[in-house]
Length: 356
Image 1 (cartoon, one colour):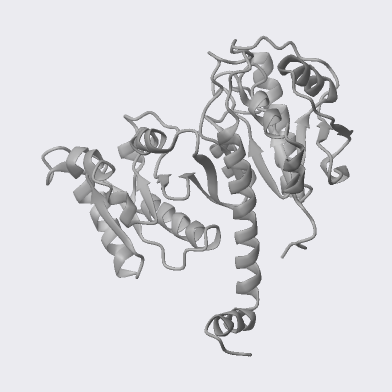
Image 2 (spheres, rainbow, N blue to C red):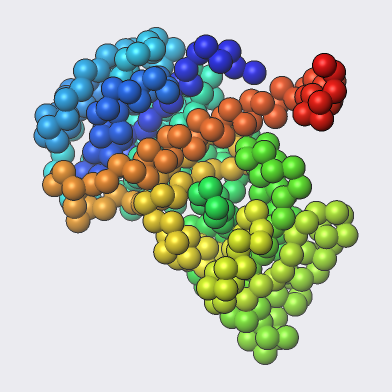
């Protein structure tokens, strides 16, 4: 477990330079008290950060470093990933700024894998402009799934609402054909494991939403719920997993049924993210669960429509930062306890007033 005297080292990929990502990331550290909580490491360049802080009128001192391992506590550190000065035209999708977003992300992930940073917080990218020979992924989640060990799960989280996805960035017409018993089991187990080790929930209860409207209405509106989803959930329940469903998605959130569960597993992207962003927009965090390292992101995109206008709210980025740090602590604590079962038993007895 990490020495508590050391601040968590947070790597930050800069995102699309023409979007609001750099603005919300830098605004987060405009308050110097943030350095009491962590050591930030931006992956960009001194010239780029200087341009951005001047544009947004952000008063900030930063420390240029050659690599993340050189980061200093009490400083806003900037790893110089590039030496040139990219052309920034706020609000305009550009292959150029997309390429810099990927340079930043790749450098940050490399540092994360080496252990030079503890967690990664990613500013938003534009899925179209980042497409290139070296980055043929629909988003962060799929790229991180390749780079980091484990089974990735796109997990949107707040204190009271947690929604994961069976399928994430795929066309909605393809989603049903991708949902198999193996995928259902894989994602349920990944969600369960994350709830235990990342959020400290000992026996998580998981609700699963139906694939079709009304969960298929006994086969009248699609057969996937009866032929694929129900049997898979029954098998998991027989294996002592606290998994329930399928529930009709159209009434599940309106009836507040989600409050009876620790997390919800949705069949496809919009089925999960529409209710999540309706209930928690600006307060939610996109967490890539199930991997060997911790990555979080704000719950919004590049917002080109307000980029460069100094209007972007950094609250979701701050939530992503603090959530990532809390998950890192929980995971470290869980790792320590599972490595030392005697310590775990002593802590339980101490909680009951024993060992005094």
